[in-house]
Length: 333
Image (cartoon, rainbow, N blue to C red; front, side):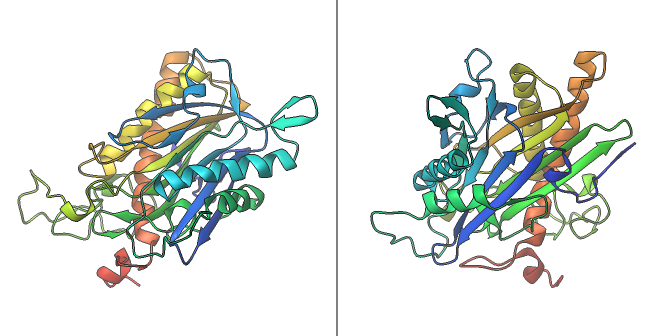
């Protein structure tokens, strides 16, 4: 039996904490995923327009085995500065590998595009992302809100407000898996002509409204795209588990977890999106045998958590800037 964890957040995975920061004027934000100890990590990039930092170090053939944090940020290319702020915060906490008198944190990151959401982006020579990255890495906790939070603060999902979502799953034997996703796709998370989420069949405990199966009254074979947002997109996130996995195994988990995007967003992995998923292991539990089957199970559960996190992000997002929130649109307050 598989059920959501007590918080139904990625922090149900032992050893994971989350920090968020946002800028109300710019309508943008940052999320830092920080393990209590350096965590083995992998990554998979599927979108046609990615923006990332230090993803190459996560290749199985590269030297670095563990990361000190992963940062998700709005701001497009400006948001890559958020990881620098997180590095400074973690170094001040003596995290990272030691070289002489320095601590060198490893902090891969990915960014989404939220530059045309109605916020004031005239920040001059010093964009706010480095400071937000510093704040996010300093203010970590096991409990956090969803929706207009962190990297999802300025996000939009198709033509409605996007946000930050999270979900978790725990098996009877104690395997923990969770996801945190900043949802900003060009595609839609809703079945056309309905308020129902594409991920409806994976919903747990009415976590995104409990509407169930949609009543389809129109052709959904070719879902239209909002041309005004093309190139202004990307969904990014992290999945984590307490099971001890290698970098190559975590890369496979990240690959499988991308299917969660496909279950919750249509279309997905377009030329206009930079869809990226990181996978982390806190190594609190040994893998069950046989290994290939156990790994496949973790990847499958991770994909479901991703889909649920996508829907939860939009369900909890409130109207902001030029986009309406889901519950305002469908009078579900």
